[in-house]
Image: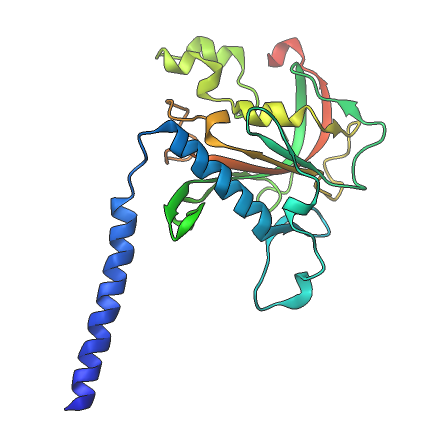
Length: 248
């Protein structure tokens, strides 16, 4: 009889815990105060930098609590991150930058091997990026394995803007992530590195939501809202050249 009671109790506790998890997801409400949102982003980005490192090819990896092989890696927060007035943070990985390299200008067409994820900072078990609201914007490293030229979140063609049917879609900010553009200017590009060459990612750009889409309407990249989302870009620039007229 005691065993039956214990089983019922355990099942009840499990149901309650699961229901609480479900309720946490369902009842999350975006704070009305933009200052609160900005504070969430800032704290979650800092925690992300403390919880992750760069592996030997420059990929962002999470520290493991059970595997000691990553113990000798430095946290992202220990790799000389530079914070810009916009809140954008960039980290240039030592020893893998092209020298002298090509300057990336606002008119540069880039060819890049890149991984970009988006995150929502919430205050549930402390302020952090909530894994429930995490997703991939693009991943050529683990996906196609080939660099991409001028991804849409970096540059939208004039022809796309001209063909837009709504006022919002006629704006560059509907597609482009300003914080990524801003951070990228602190990196150098390789001089037409071959698409078949192995990647060695140059660094990281972390973009708070206020320097991305904030609360504005945006292009439907993947069927999910990207409002209030922070972005983390992990990349290598294979080439940068003045954008040809035909590609503007």
